[in-house]
Image (tube, rainbow, N blue to C red; front, top):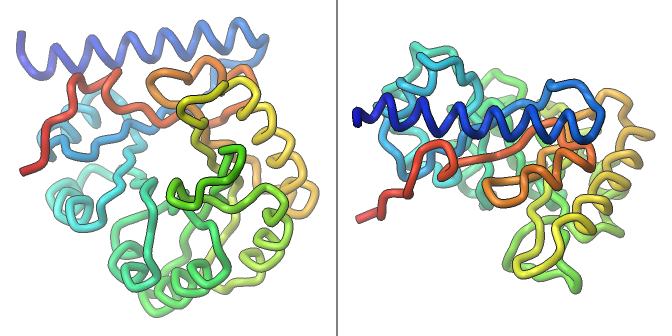
Length: 231
């Protein structure tokens, strides 16, 4: 089996899962698939683009920057989905169109300054920590702090708040976590009506996320197969 055939089959399977989940939730089949390409080669990104994928996700800025440079002609939307340190903000705004992991005011400030210096504006999502109790090492803003973070980020020049992002607890119950995230997303929309993105759900739990209103799902291995080991 060629690599293209392998990816084509994986992609078709995930697209079918998304369609079935949307039908079960009685909602339009309009969920955006962000294919997580971290650790996979740029050649896979090119195949994905040929197969109609427009959004890809990365979580390591050095790997992503190199891959972006190799694939700059494809016109893709690149999502930063990994934890981000302030001192990497300038590097990330050079390749990421969407930064999904804004979880504290000082990070938003750093990304905003870097975007302005680069002469760009970046879409951002507020990452919400869905663990109970909150586990800081997993990243994300505590649910009770989201409103304050939203107010702060909305005022940062160079950034546009587009919605929220969350990762289900592991171990844990994704249904309950995504229901909480949906409520938080609704609260954010009360402040910023245009913040309509709800990024939730991965290979193992995308159906639960879609049932609770996810507009974007982040899927890697279910599309691309076993993740290569970084050397």
